[in-house]
Image (tube, rainbow over all chains, first blue to last red):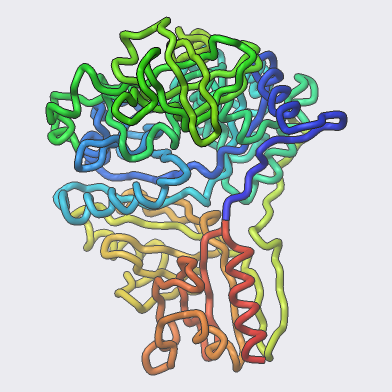
Amino acid sequence: MWLRAQWFKRDGEKGWRDSVDREVEMTRSGVGVCDVTTLGKIDIQGRDAAEFLNRIYSNPFLKVPVGKVRYGLMLRDDGVAYDDGTTARLSDTHFVMTTTTANAVTVLRNMEFARQCLWPDLDVHLISTTDGWAQYAIAGPKSREMLQKVVDIDISNEAFPFMACSACTAFGTPARLFRISFSGELAYELAVPSRYGDSLIRALMQVGQAFNAVPYGTEALGVMRIEKGHAAGNELNGQTTAAMLGMAGMVSQKKDAFGTRLSQRPDMNRDDDLRLVGFKPVNRQAKLDAGAHFLTQGSAQDMANDQGWMTSVAYSPELGHSIGIGFLKRGRERMGEHVHAYDPIRGKDTLVEVCSAHHVDPEGDRQRG
Amino acid sequence: MADIVLCATSPLGGRQVTLAGCDLREVDNVALTSLAVPLGNDKAFAKTLKDKLGLARPESRISTTSKTARALSLTPDQVLVLHDPALTIDVTSQAYTTDQTGNWCILELSGPNARDALSRICPLDLDPSAFPVDASARTVMEHLGAIIICIGKDSYLLLSASSSAESFWHAVEVSLHNVA
C-alpha cells in the first residue's frame, strides 16, 4: 500500500489547515518538495513506440522531440476521458509515461491489450517501472536555484526550458530530471532508482535548508492544483469528456486514436453541455463544498433544474478565500454569473460566482519562467 | 553538494528470520534487468543472450542459468534477468533493456517446510514433479502479484512489488508460523 503524508505538522500548528496553508505559501513563495513516487510509470520502448503512443493518446505524439515531455490525454474506447499524464521521450525508441496513481495498472493493462491484440505488427514493449523509481517534485520560484546544487546539468531556462527532460546525476547518483509542474510553479520532478529514494529526500531537505525549503503533503498538492485548475481524479471520474474538461482541442481530428471516433458523437460535443469552470463564494467568508449541485438563481431546487456539480474545493491561501472547480452547463459562457451551490445533504445553499478554473496565474508565467 | 553521497537501502533492509525450520531472508544483492526482444529479432537476441551473458533463452516456466545470472521468460517477448549487480548487461544492440531492480523485493525461502508454507498462499502446484528446480512462474500470493522460482530442493526465490514488500513478507512469515 502506498503511504504518503497529507501534511507535515509543525509545532504551534493547531489544525491541519494551519499546516497545509503554510506548505502552500512557502512553496509558492520559496520552494517545496513533495513525494510523487506513487504516480504510475511505464517504460515504453520500440521502433514503433511513437506510433503506438500516437494511437493511445488523443493528442499528437509522433513528433515529440527527444529530451521533451508532452502532456497527454487518454480516452476510453467509448470516447470518455479516463487518464492523463506526461510522457517523456528519452531517445528515438524510448519513452517514459506517467499515469495517475489510481489508474497505473489499468492503463498498463489496456496498453498491453492494444499492443498484443490490436496492433501486434508494431514493435513496442511495455513494462511497469512504478516501483523502480522514487520521484520528488521540487516546486516554487527558488526550485531552480536549489536544484542546481543537486544535479550536474545546466538547468537554466535557456538550457532546460519548461517540458524538458534529461538524464543527469543527483548528488552523483544516476537520475532523471523532468521540468513539469502540477503546482503551477516553476517546478521539476527528480527521479532516482527507488533504493536511493530515502537517501535523496534527506539530502534534498539538507540542501533545502539554505532556501527554507518545506516538505509538502498531498493536501497542499491538492490545493495548488485546484488553484491552478488542473483536472485530477474528481474531474476524471469516468463520466467526463475532453470537451467538458476544456480539452476538446486535445482530441486530434487528424488521426484515429483510441476513442477518437466515438468521442465525435454529437451528444458528446453539444455546445450546451457541462464545462469545467471555477467558482468563488460571493460572500468570501463562505466555505465551498465538493458535491454541491448548481442551480440558476430563481429556479426550483430539483433535479430538473440541475446545472452541474462542484468537483473539487480548497481554501486558497493566495486568494484568501475558498475556491472550487466543477462542471456547469454552458460554463464558459457564464463568467461572472452568480449561481447557487446547493447541497441538501449538508443543508447548505451558497451563492457562488462563476470564474475561470485557473484561479492563480492563468497565463502560466510562473511555470515557464 | 560534493559532500553528500546517496546511500542505497533495500525494501526490507536485508531482513532475515528462521521459522518452522526454514530460513527466510531478503535478497538485496541481486540486480534485475528486463530485456524486450524487438519484433522479428528472436534469433539474434537468443545468440546475443548466449554470447554475452552465457544464458540460453528461457522457455515459458523454466528459467536458465549461468554462473552470475538467471533468465526467466515472463511474456513471449520479454526476458527478466536476475544477475550480479557487477555484471554488465550489454545487449542493447539486440534488445530493449529496462532496469527492474527497484521494482521488486526478492525473498529467499529455504527449508524442509518451505513448500508446505508456500502451498498455503500460492495457488500453483509446487510438487517437484510439476515445479522442478529452475521452474519459474508468475502468480499471486495473498492478492499480491508475485514471481516464484525454484532454485534448489526446498528452496525458492519469491519476487513481489517493492512498494508492498512489508505485506508480502508478512504473508510468507504468517504462513511459516502456520506450518511450524
